[in-house]
Length: 530
Image (cartoon, rainbow, N blue to C red):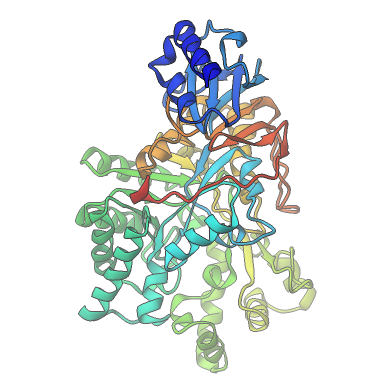
């Protein structure tokens, strides 16, 4: 105890206690491991410009030291990290993932696909699908341990399914009240807002009025509205009308909007990014709070049903679809619409089947499979779906020019939309740095960091994270930008990224010189309990 008091007084004399925080952190608990990081170029996440400042991590929190301070003036028992020539930044926050099953798995709960990209916090429950009740997942993840922090949205599609099933029906007043109560329950359990997947069944069956009423509930708890819009292409109401619908929901529900994986998908809407941006900028100028995320690839990945089957045909679910395929008139109609959807998504050559359980189709394009089996592509799609419901498809359906146009907007963040079978799960943040910051210089490193950390934390309402700031939780990454490498590809989509030298989660060093420590120190972040 004498040593502790003497040492803290010494800190106060030498450092002026950095607004007393330096010694305050020590006083809270002197037994934890501390790290003194010297020589890094520090991007604080709030500004796009770096500063040369030394950083002390102690008891899970960040303490900044003046740039003139030397190693000897840091904690004598702190581990010293020479970060000369490296960048130090806040850990990235991924606003859109599908990592619920990974976090629940004893084999994947380390969340290494995120950590090796520098992602320290992930959001899940996107596209209208979430665990429910969300408290159950929070408790499970806390008990079993997770590698990154995690926050959740409550899924509109999940709530709709619980009350209405997978049918194209509209709720009566009593059913709508039940849905509202489920949204309220999730918000009280810590959800950050409500997500929708209006392109996917059963969300696709909902009218705007239903979504507005449910979004009002999320808004009353200070939540946001995260959406996979109804149509990113020309499937139903079209891209532009879908943007209008979303803006209308935001206005009428008085809720901040977040467009998930914003894009112009398919040849019918290539080049529409300018019009979409103009509409959103106008709405922002009118007072709506609007942000978006994107993954830096021109190919998407989704279910074969969602991509090519008309929504009316899956009313009632997969079994109902199979029954319709047995009726000749309905089957012919479905075939025609599949053919049109193949064209819409870029043609047979641009669609790659992803079905590891069906090896004869896996990783082959529809045009090659059509030639191999001697049947039209639309007929082949039906045969594949009659064998398995969960078949996925990778489709190269976007233009690089639209991708870059969205990327340059200060309200567009990076989001992985991480799913197995697409390199975006393992490489989105690494690719953004490697290709679009270093190689093509589309955006600066400072912009990329800011839009992947503080901007997400600020707009989503995450407290004391997302910045290198005194007293903030120490989610910190250290790396050489020129050595960041995306190793995942469409041929090998599950390869880990490399280049992150050090990754701290809640002040614990979980990636040390590029190697995972094995510690599970992530926490669940609840909006109402921060």
